[in-house]
Image 1: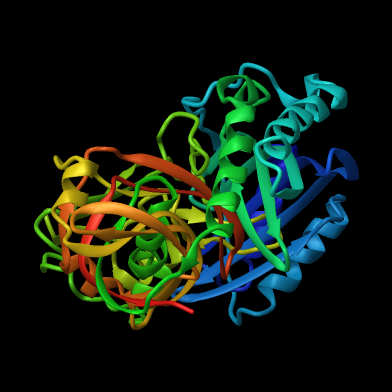
Image 2: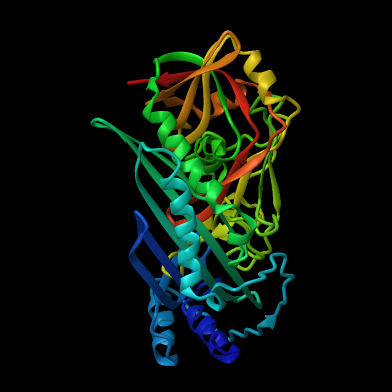
Length: 459
């Protein structure tokens, strides 16, 4: 995307005022987005982004600049202006970039740019037909389709020079069920690090039916009671609670500055003995995976918690300096407009040995959260609240009737210690995660878990 000599010159310019590390991130990204309401395409977007980010370290001080003007003059000027934030001099700077080829773990069978828009629209129509015909109560169906191909080149003053391509595809189905003046929404949004073959690997009709099933079920549900109950949180997107309430607290972005409840607790017990959790950016073709992170470090499987003991954090280069620890291949960014920092990739609790029906039968009275919605967390304290998209009462060890309006309120570390059963049905869900380095694709996941007690907010 840029030639070697130009990149070396940019790095030399970046270090000219006393910096001790410099990095160039080059991005070329192609995006397609289609939006359908009630069977008709409402919006179609496609485009290309190209730009360069330049980052400089001096000790723990960091400077970041970016530009989409990619002439030699503009790039050298951007590097010079970034370097002016650092006071000092460097002489006799020599940089020799050595190309590092990486193994591509994520094979793409059908690149999205080889597929016509008509085939993409037909996928959406199939999902729409299935969702809208599910039940007479379904009053509206919204479908979104997206694919992207991101090419990145990363080089730094340590001699690293490497490239990666990330191809992602996703479909989102949102169904609205209505009755009188009441409306409820259900959604399902699968995605993967794949090309158009992703839509041949899944059943889009089943995805549409699932979104409408949730909407209809919640339309006919009564309001959830409030209080403190045992709660069973099912698999797949149920992992969003661990992602938000605990995962962000394990990112060096928070840990390095002491803004995390998990700071300084390596080797200590932070969860139930049943809990082991990892962040794994190497999982083949998963939504949050890549071959390298956005600093050029190969992704890896990072053990976070093992049998309740805190084993590791997710670390990027700058925060690794602050913590005197090595990068774990966890640096991510939305685009060249953002400096990278430590972020999750595919984060999940490992499977246990319990069966879901066993967990339910062992719960006298409680709440079964089959599908989770969105929420928020304070990483410094671990306090969180999450909405339940689809919930049910558990009475006398059996699932009885659906309930809506449930909110789970708690504290991440406390919840980890109150998990007394973990299922064997590990599954992943896909989402977009926002933080200081922008919005990035991330998998959440877990088997079903039973929490001894959680505060449940109702109407």
